[in-house]
Image (cartoon, rainbow, N blue to C red; front, top):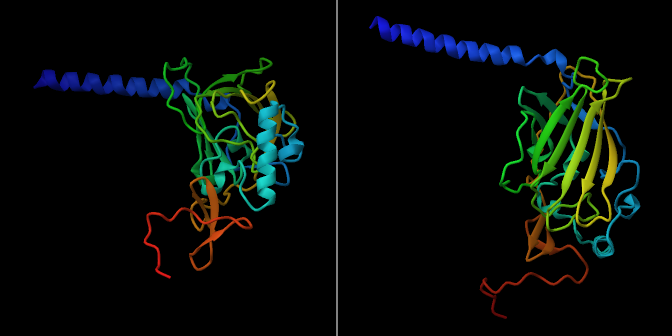
Length: 282
């Protein structure tokens, strides 16, 4: 009985030692203070490059066939359609678009992972910072698989830059609500440098470079988020599907009217195929 007690005590001591060792290894003071609520700092509609207008105004380095997709998307939207924007049915924006930060974000730093919690449809990110290699297989996802590394740039004695690379995407994805396209092969690679402003810690920089098969070259965008100056910020639940009046049937977008009836979204739009519904006798 004494032997069993001794073994149990040793096991408990070992567990506490490992736990305390991990706690000591994570020195929060070595990381930048990114606590609080972050909102995007650019006015107007969300877009990949905040310094330029959305859609055609982004001047994206698209290959000709993907510029044609953008033009077709804009033309369809001018008629009342949704074009190449897949998010109207509440699909995830995915990366890189999710970093437009529609409705606020929270950043939580842990020893092995940095989390970016997005309020918009709870479309959060998990960035592994534990030194892992890329897995042999990545299950595709809208936000991809992200591996990051904290860097002490300038030898300050504290980490001040998070470098991130993301791969393993699925689609459909677009850069903004005009339907500016990414390639359907989903072989995108998104690299980010995330760091607080040196002069103002309430400004966060996100320098993002997207390499994609639809582009003629890697595309750099420089974003800024600002921290809300409220120690108890308000977080409003965002459920995209709640009260969403958009319906997609066989690739066509329709509306639900106020009385719950299906209605066209564009002039002269034909109704969906009703072959599986009994037709009223005339």
